[in-house]
Length: 239
Image 1 (tube, rainbow, N blue to C red):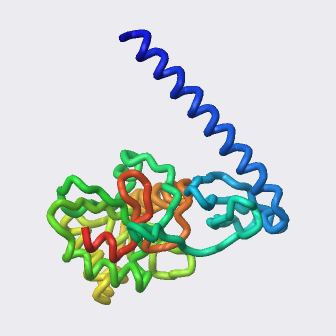
Image 2: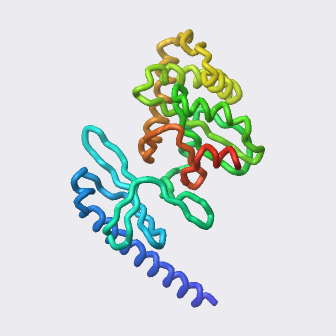
Image 3: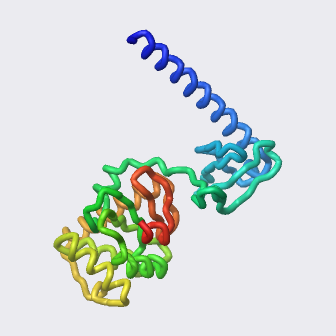
C-alpha cells in the first residue's frame, strides 16, 4: 500500500511538472506576439480553458497596468473582454493570487459571520461602490464580507472618506459610516484628527492600497471570493 502511495505521488509530481513546463512555454509564446511586445507587456499568468487560453500580462513603466485577454490555441485570434461557460453561465476568470489572512488584516471592517467569505475592494466616493453599498443589506446570513478601502487617486474626497470610516470605534460603526457616505452624508468633511491619529489612519489606508495593488486590483468595486475568483455584484447579492 505504501509503495502504491509513493508511486501515485511520483506520477502526480511528474504530471504537475509537465503542466508547469507547458504553461511556461505558452507564456513565452504569448510574450512574443507582436501586439504584446508592442505595448511592452509581460505575461504573468495563463489558464487553459480547453479551447482557449486566458492570460494576464503586466505593463510596467510610468503608467503600469494589467491586461487580461483570451487567445485561441492556434495563436491567431486574441480577444479582449469577458467570456463565459455556455453550460454553467459562469464567467471564465483567472483567480487572483491572494492571501486571505493578509486581506482580512488590512480590511477596514467585516460584515456578517457566514461561512462564505468575500472581499470587497471599494472606494467610498465611487458611485458604483455606493450603489453596491446600498444593496449589501440584501446579503444572506451565510455570507461574510470584508471591506477593503481602495481610494482612487482621481477621487479628491476618497481618502478623507476612508479616514472617517477607519476612525469609527467598531465594525458596526464603520459599516454605518460607509453607508452614510453612500447615502450622501458629508459628516466626513467635518472630521479633525490629531497628528498622531492622522498618521495612523493614513498608514492603514496605505497598507490596504499596497496589498490591493500587489495582487492586481485596479478598479472598484472589485469583489473576490475566498479563493481569489472575481465575483460580480449581482452574483454576490444572489449568494
